[in-house]
Length: 388
Image (cartoon, rainbow, N blue to C red; front, side):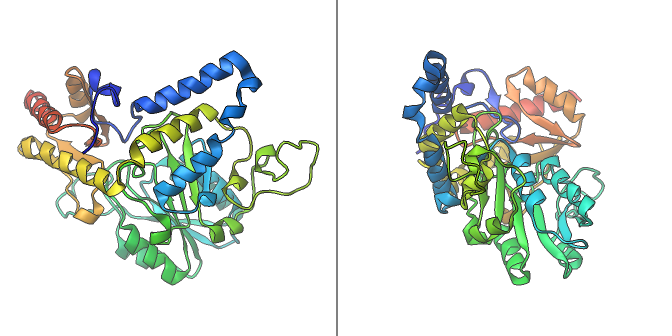
């Protein structure tokens, strides 16, 4: 049974939050842990640090548990873009190599690869496709296809860089199929996990994923400005360091020892000081929520809540994008019969928080919401959409 209480998820007191694909409200234990660290620093500065020296090793360990991998494969970052830049800028590309991505990727998983064009690397973009066959008239992003990917892969393809879940439509990649495709062709699969980690299971080693970059303030409900990065050992060995500082060197606090002696594990990418209050928050959050419940259980509950919402949603006023089960995610994109931004503003007056993107309204409930919440949300959508 999930703990869905207001004491653990205080946002429930003020709103019906359906925008976990945007910036989520922090979970209670995360907030307390961050506050405790900041209070200690305010009262003692460096004198207060020793009890917190284990924060980063604990972060590595807990994120390793979440991904079912060795803690040495985890790096603490600030956001998805930082993780992608560390990888893209350090990858051993040669002139004429190719990267394949999707034309409608989030900027954090687009611009780092665009930068490689300065090295003579070609960025090949998958076209937008309509896998449902009923949204062809929409100009909004929908999905990419494996057929298009197969057609565009060449002998020069080095990396396929895709989001696990597309931020606009909610289309989820089948990582098992995608990982097997890359393994057969010796291509590195790099995944943007910002819209899935905390909602969908993502186990990189089971899917032959070389790297996963994540922002922790979406489905993980952590502090704004916190992130994590997974890299496999073989992939990490390929990556040249493009950012360096004291924290990535094995000599640690011996700051006058300037030997080039970087860590070989995930600390290789932790080049300098990190936001320790964020790490404290993430440790408490992972322990209280995402390592307490299974990711499969969380996914199933999120999809069940979506189904309740759809049960009460008026089909004459909304068209939902209903992907096949293996492509569903925490984001349910619906096309309203009226202006989406105006509708989002109107339901906000009833305490509902949703985010419009292109022609869609994104409904993104997390597991701690209730059946009654979803029924109320659908009824509110119906009432306000009927006003036109």
